[in-house]
Image (cartoon, rainbow, N blue to C red):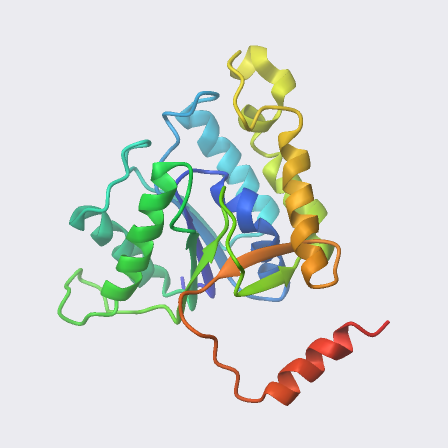
Length: 245
């Protein structure tokens, strides 16, 4: 199955927290989208690998994904190795995404940082004809970085105002991580994610980036290269017209 956009995360819920509003919006526009998580989340303080897989499937349904998949790289031990690059290259060559989303390369969690480097390098290597995987070589048009813990100056911000409620519903699929009242079922240990104020932080962040572009909610993204615009007059005229009531 060929996808228009494929988002990679180290763990189930990484993509949902960072850029699920954009993924949902792309799907609503007719684009085929997918999410791949590199690990099964077996090292998580709350829940289990089995529970996380069930939550991931529910989240994928809400996001309207055309495809979702969990790889089996060990949680907490993601490393930038040739073996792991080949695993991701095979996924890229299978789905042939036009764009790829991956975490920003500076993050609190080492798995997120390693995922960023793995996906960037795999996206490039995937286009090499002499790298054999019994698949045709394929290189995505662009690798786009989403924000995790640390902020960056965005290359662009996507207006997700019409899809923010669905984003929050997607995040709440992960009851083991975010529903702090379910301690008896998912574990008594409190984490940053299980605190009552954590979901408020997500909404506040989305509002912050929304204000930068004059909308209610936004999600920031970064690309390493300059963005090409063929017709600045037409590009900014359309942007201006969207701001007129």
